Structure formats: structure tokens, C-alpha cells
Length: 511
Image 1 (tube, rainbow, N blue to C red):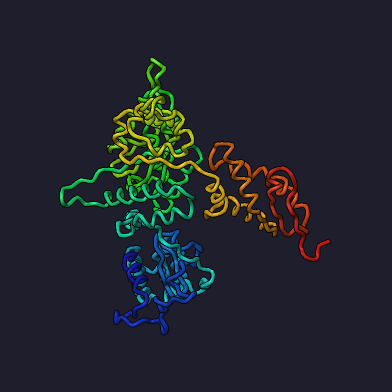
Image 2: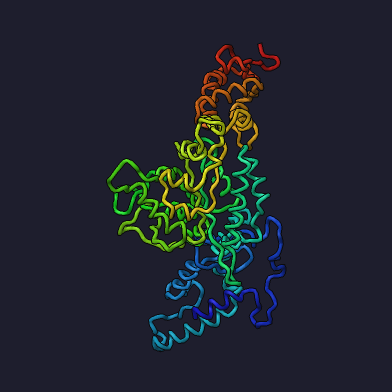
């Protein structure tokens, strides 16, 4: 009887003769896109008030009247008992068989009466649930959008959607000031790398990876460029610090930990992580130690451990943890299509480059002065692989980083542009902070030049700008919330040089 009952519940919109005509005079329009469209909202059980997403399935008895699978099962269990059958008039008049008939005969009559009375399900559902109010449309929950499947996520990143190099560089220009050569090199390298990822290798020509090595002084924008690039491409990014890496078996992080960070950035989606970007910062700290005779577990040994990752190999990576142990599940990642970008400041590298360039003696007609390249801020742009080998990088490691480029040192003009031009410029951030207090902030041109000059003296790159602005704005940010009459603050050159005070402009009508 239960199977027949379920079938009739599903077919409750048809008449009892099976003609397919609806018993409802005005059936609901399922394709209606208005706010009252039942297809855009979840149905709610009229008995337990659970939503459609919380139950296995929902039976629609009438428009606006639904019952979930659990409540339907409880109802059927109740109907199968003798006490509740008497409510519907389905139980025998003499359940003890006092009329002379046997219990088996009475059970047979009972089953026949139940099937006969359940023939018209519309009357049955009206009798059974007629007292239950229908759930109003405005009380039904909106259906949640289905989460995209992994295949859908992968389909979003296709070679047709890959941006060409000039578009990538143009978008980098909105965030990074200067470094024209570096942005051009990175745009081309990333474009070629993802063309290699999507290549099906139908002609038998295999494309090699274009891993990159960035050389530049501290604060020139190495990490910021990689972060911006990954955000523009919408690919997972992992930033690892090479100073924490050690050889396998020693205290510290194994080289596989960089892949664990990438897997976490990809929400543990292995296929998506295998197309991501890994940035290993402070790579110059892995240089060989020339002054020690002990085993270099945090230098040359780590370079050798990174060789298999850079070239491409299948590596066992823990899921949801940074280190391997027996309690953490493992998964296999293929690093063939992962783009590795290494960066470092490489201190003292300029001396090695100058020594190579000053090959001639300082005496004689053809002699060159030893301090000829001392004032060259972009001396790192003349780097060669021989200089990096002398610095302490092993040739096997350098051979797996074919794209080597240097970032320019920042000048005073670059510092001023960094303050004002990028989309997330420092001054724009402070103007937004003061605008929340309904106060305008303005910097004079002389003040910007004075800030840039101070930053150059600290020799920490663009990071010095933030520290100087914090010092200048400390008293202003402390005093402004006290006085509601302040409408505008102008930072002058004298205030930056500690020879005066900022210009305060009161609101109109303030005393």
C-alpha cells in the first residue's frame, strides 16, 4: 500500500481516471520570474516546518501545502495502527470478531476498505491535512545558489580567458609604480607559462617551464608584484620564506611545506593548486656558506631539495597541515604546471658585479676608476649567472630558473608617485580614514618631496614611506576625534621637516 500511496502522492495533480487533467483549476506557473515564483523559494513542510534543503524529499499535496518524507512516513505508521484507523472510518466495527467472523477475515475487510477509501487522494489529503495552514510565500526561504563544482572552477580558467602580456602589464601599472622592465618580463613569462599549461602537446613539442628569479633591493616591490599578479590572474598563490626551510630530517620546514601552503590557498583542491604560483622569498639566504666546514642544512642542501620541485615531480603533501605525520592524510601533487618565482635582495652582490666589470687596472691611459659604478643604483641589472654562482647559488638551481631579471632601485620621483598614484596608495588610505570622521586631508607638493627624501635616507625602500607617514599623522589622528569643528587638514613642508604645524581649516559656521 505504501508504494501505491507514494505513487498517488506524486501524481496528485492528475484525476482519478488517469486522464492527465489537473484537479487544480489554476495550476501555478513554474517559469514565472516574479518574486512570488515558487521555483525561486524553498518549500516548507506544513507539519515540522523544515525547509526543502533540510529533508530528503518533499511531497506537494496542494499548492502551498507540502509535507516532508519523514512526516509522511510517520503519518503512514499512524494510519497502519488500529486506533487511528477508526478516525477515518476504516477500522472494523468489531475488532474482536464478536460478529462471528474471524480476525483474518476482519483484516482482509480492513485492507479492502483502506484501498477503497484511499482511491481519491485529493479528498484524503484534504481530510488529513485540511486543518494545516499553508505556509505563506513570504515565509519561505530563498533557494541558495548551488556551489560550483570543481569542473566548473577549472572551466573558468581557460586559455581563451588568458590575458595577453600587454593587458597584464597595463593592470600591473595600476598597482605598481615604475619597474617597467620587470613588469614586462613577468607579463611575458606568465603568459608563456599558462600557454604551456593549456598546451595539449598534439605535435610532440614539449614546452619547458619559465620559472623566474627576481633580484632587487629591499622595499622595491618584489612580493607586492607577485601578489598583484596572482590576484589579476585569479590563481592560488603561496608565499614561502626560504629562511625557515631546512634539509629533510632536521628541525625546520621541509621543502614540501611550500606546496602545503599552495594547497591551503586552493581550498585543498589539488587540480587547482597544480596550476598555481609559488613565490619563495629570501632565496638569497640559501647561498652556500663559504666560511664553514660543517654540513649546510639550511643552504646548499635546501637548494638541492628544491630542484625536483622546480623541474616538476610528484610529491606527497599533507592535507590540512604544514608537516607530515601519521595523523594527517597525504595527497600527491604534480609540480609540473606550478610556476615558481624566487626573489631576494642578494646583498653584497653589487660588489661581485663591480669586481667583474672593473677588469682593467686603475693605472695607465686605458685605466678605469675603481669607483666608476659606485653611484649606479641599477647595478643589479648587469648581473650574470657567474655572479650568482660566486654569490653561493649552485648551477643546478640556477639552471631551473631560466628567467632572471633585476628590479630597479627607487628614486625620489618614484617615492612621490608611490605616495599618490597607485590604486592603493598610502595617502589615499589616510584620506579614507579621515573621511570617516568627515575631515578632508591634503598634502602640499613640498611635503611629498620632503617625505620621499626622508624615505631615501632610511634605505629601506617603499617600506620607509609608511613609517614616516605614521609618524606625521600620529598627533593629527589623535586630536581630530576630539574637535568636531575641524573640516580640513593640510600637511605642509614645514610640518614634515619639524619646523611648523599643519594647517587646520574649520568648518563653515564653526566658532
